[in-house]
Amino acid sequence: MESMVQVTNAVFLLNITTVGDRACMDASILVVVDIPEGITSIGKSSFNCCSSLKEIKFPKSLRSIGGASFCDCSGLEEVNLLHTNVHKLGESAFYNCTSLREMKIPDSLQTFNDDYGGVFEDCSKLVPSNIYVNNPCDSEAVVAYLRSIQ
Image 1 (cartoon, helix red, strand yellow):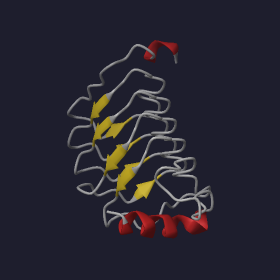
Image 2: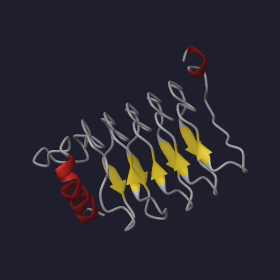
Image 3: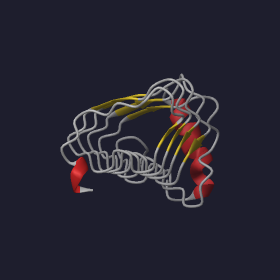
Image 4: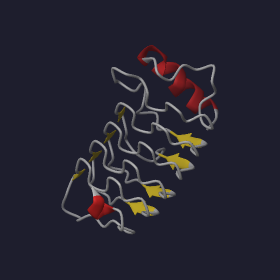
């Protein structure tokens, strides 16, 4: 999506409940995203390849984050979902977020509920190498680890 390359700011309408699939995909100079209250889900690949993204403000109403939503957001260092009602992180949601070092998750998130398990694959600053993040069976181990460091 060549047209998204120059997007520096994303504004969402207050009367929507979903950030659509690929909404800001490839917006490589997007730095901050403020998702308004009322949004309950973030679609697939919504912020995929937003390599300059540093800060995301999530609403309390958020319940799910789609597959590859923040994939390849290499500038993202921390994510705080504690105040949300997120119960689902889609497949590869934070894949290859190489700078991600802090992830705060709410009690509502118990597992990743995906077939692949790569929600945090290649997030070496976040999840230690002894936890196999590519295995769906280890999603509970990843959740337990993230809770232990909060």
